[in-house]
Amino acid sequence: MWNVQAKTVVTHHPEPVTGLLPQGLDPALALKVIDEIDYGVMVLDDHGRLRHANHLARHELGAQRLIMSHGNVLLGVNSELSEQLQMALEQALRGQRRLLLLKDGERELSLAFVPLGLPLQSDSPAVLVMLSRQNACDNLSVRMYARAQNLSPSEEAVMIALCRGLTIPEIADAHGVAQSTVRSQIKALREKTGSSSIRHLLQRLNSLPPMVPALRIVSPLSHNAMA
Image (cartoon, rainbow, N blue to C red):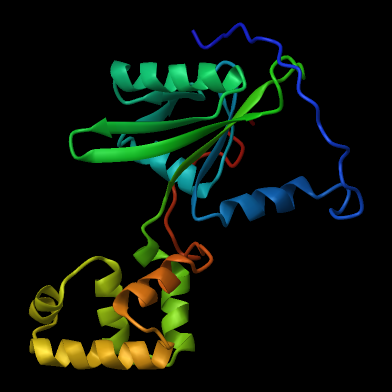
């Protein structure tokens, strides 16, 4: 049901830049690199079959919140979501980039469909699918940033709470301290990190390199879905 008649698009491409990338990158190393990306990444063929899924994509597929894999085919958990996925794939196979916002009750997931190559350019058309980024507060770099700035455990906890969007009264309530204590900790946070405001601090946290925790639990699916 995933087959699509793709249109020919003529586009001028500049000459490739040589000498910048190593030739013959080890495929096993490339897969390890993709697994370290802090959001799910999948590659689909023109039938919607999974050719590859990194750790976080396999985790999302295994959780079956909104998407799943059945017979190596990417599907939604219901027919409506499956139709949306099929439409996005068809558009990507026609050379169109598409952002898909899936929602079912309280559950939400965004997916970016990116065509790999031009329509009819090769015998094996493929589409890159990137899932929503992980919550910035869960980024391992945030914890490492706290260590690098010599934050105390309580200051780090306040910083994480601010990152999660909690207010000063909510943080004080959760930590069982006075609001004045939280304000003092925020002042220390700003001084140690050289941040002019809470907003400035949060901007810094959001700009940190995404780093996947080494012990993150993932679904035990095949590393290469097509293998």
